[in-house]
Image (cartoon, rainbow, N blue to C red):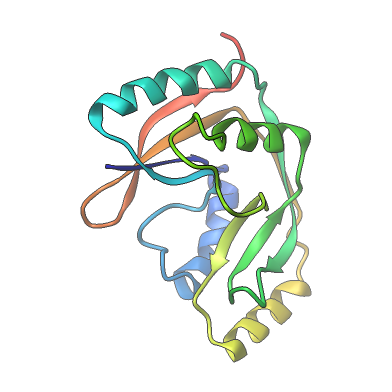
Length: 171
């Protein structure tokens, strides 16, 4: 099975992201707006039990943290993806690094960590320019406290669902 680890923001921020995703994100129906902490990885039923324990161990080292959206940005010229830029923080970087080590569910991500919430992807060049131009004129700042992360599982139809939720910090 395929698994991943994500942070899901509040309904307020998800609604704001979805107002764009409905039209501009080809994966709109597959997963709710999120910040990816560990990209998709394969694990057997036996392996996932070990991974669950590792996640429980890691989250005790991270207190709830502030998630702050700054503006819209893009991965262009690599891809015509538009996203809400999440301000990098020591806490987010630490969480990402903890789950992207070789001993945790396979190889680390080949990409640098750019915390974000995707709002549009697979756009034409003209559509990309138009949407990014519109978004650059808006005040998209948003701040909230994140107190949990989710282990996700992908079903046969490609939809991602919450497999288990973990509270940050020691209980």
